[in-house]
Length: 335
Ligand SMILES: *Cc1c(COP(=O)(O)O)cnc(C)c1O
Image (tube, rainbow, N blue to C red; front, side, top):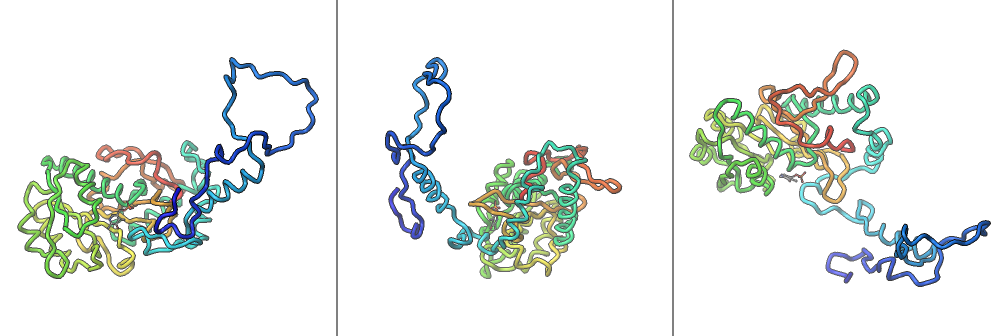
C-alpha cells in the first residue's frame, strides 16, 4: 500500500505472509520423530494447504506491524464527528472487557445472568432519570439505529391510533441519518428550513405540520452547536396536530444534568452512549443507542425488556404493541 496523506506515523507497507515467505524457512523446531514418515492421503488433503514457509521472526514482525495499524488514544485523536467530544478513560474499556461482560453468553439462563440483568435494569433507570423520559431500551447498537427504533415507534403509535401518517419533518441542520431513518420506515422526509439564527422557527414548523405528518426530529443542541430555543413552542405545535417529537440526543453532553428533555416536549430520544457517555467505540462501531420514551409510548419499545420481579430480574417478551426486536438478544452488552 502506498503512503497517503493523513497516514503519517502508520506503517502501511507490509506484504502478505505469502510474499514474505521463502521455501524451506521454519518457524518451529519439532522434537525428533519416533514413528516412520508416511505420505499424507491425497484424497484427504489434495495437494496440501498452501501455507507460506516462514521463520518465527517473520511471523512475529508481521503481526506486530499489523497491530500498529490499530488506532486508539495512544496513537492519535479519533476524528469522527460528535464522538470526538469524549475520550474514553482506559479504565472504562477495561471494565467493559471484564469476563462477566465480555464472556456473557446470550443463551445463559436468567438465573445465571442476574448481575448483568441488574446492571441493564439500573442503567436504563438512570438514563430515564437523566433524560426525564422514564421508559428505556438498551437494544439499539448506534444512534442511527436508535433513530430507526424511534421511527418504528412513531409508525406503530399512529397505526395504533388508527390513522397512519406518511411524513416526518426534519430540520435542514439535521444529521444525515435522520432523513435516512425516517425513509427506512416508509416516511417521506420533509425538510424544515432553519431561521436566520440557525435554529427552528415555530411559524415555519406550523406551516408544514399537518394531520398526515407523524412528527418532527430535532437535534438539540443542533449540528451548528446552537440550543433550539423554540423547542417547547415547536413541540406544542406538533403535539396539537397529533404528532410526536423525536429528540436526536447525539449532542446531549452539552445539556446533560441541566435540561430535562421530557420537559422540552420530546417524546422519544436516543442517547449515543459512545458519544455522551463512556462506552467502547471501536472504529465506527459497535456503539450503543439507548432509546428513552415517555410512559405513553412505553408499550411500543422493543422486546425483551428487563424487569425487576421481587428481588430478581427477568426478561419480559410480553408486550403485544412492541415494535419487536431491533438487535439480537439484548443489544451490545459491551456497551
Ligand atoms: C453521531 C450522530 C448520529 C448517529 O449516531 P451513530 O451512533 O453514529 O449511529 C445521529 N445524529 C447526530 C447529530 C450525530 O452526531
